[in-house]
Amino acid sequence: QVQLVESGGGLVQVGGSLRLSCAASGRTFSRYAMGWFRQTPGKEREFVAAFAWSAWSDGTTYYADSVKGRFTISRDNAKNTVYLQMNSLKPEDTAVYYCAGDLSGFRVRVNPTDWGQGTQVTVSS
Image (cartoon, rainbow, N blue to C red; front, side, top):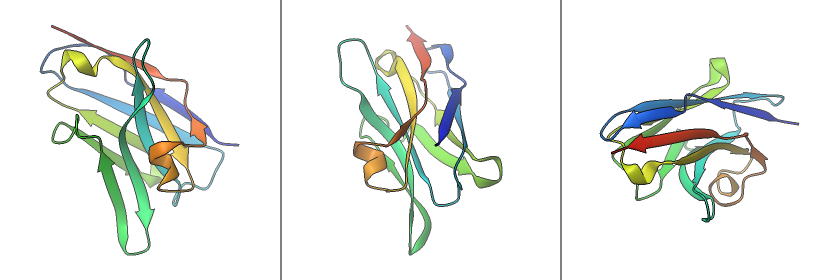
């Protein structure tokens, strides 16, 4: 059983920055793909970013078009933690952000097995 715990959400002004953290426990971390999704009321949860392992690199990152160039996903294996650095925030980034994990680098982007409880990010204009 994997536990994912997010932190770092809050209120920020337009153009500001926030960094979300997600600490994982309960599973060997090194090859576990992790990512972030977000959800606003009345809408489906949407993919934001993911970090997946591959046989030919130290890891591959994926981003939704809406956040490319503004958000950066990274991970610290020693701390079993994945981060989402969010810069140049916009009001439309306001959502509950969920950490997600899966053994599959593909599934982590579409239908992850494991979820955190979510953290609210509010961008005020």
